[in-house]
Image (cartoon, rainbow over all chains, first blue to last red; front, side):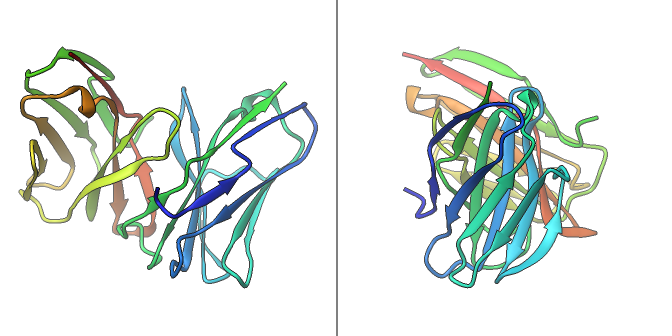
Length: 114
Length: 112
């Protein structure tokens, strides 16, 4: 158990819909990272927040957005869903905000878009 | 084009065998990490290497960072079924030190 929690574990929805994925970082960690993992693309960095502020952006689509709340939990919002958005979405947290920091990954949310 | 290329993509071996997996790039990384991911779980960090030529050992696992900090290898001695999993390398680049770039991984199966 990494100490990072993600809900829900599984999510099945239809094209065009909007979903919200939730992540609670380890106690004391200020930074949250979101990743998307698919068979063809592998693990792709989406976005990072540090103490409530966006710090870095990766390959995140405009249909996707995220935020980190004052209690440090984070949400990833995916809208106008397409079949190709089906993937595993991981949240990770670290104490510091640098890429070389030790990141602890949650168990992931498996999103299926039908 | 994948920034970090891992090889082989798949590896199936018998318990007790040795193996090496590779992580290669044309780019220089300020640090490189290796993760293992088991089915249904998130990746777990095994090691971070930061100095060119650095070698780190973790029990039966030996990690090496290339002298030019563009490549890395993971060697497992006397593999066990518990070593089965997806091995991912991830690099942090000096100019964008907030982002980790992951390779697609090597899926290792160790048969008893």
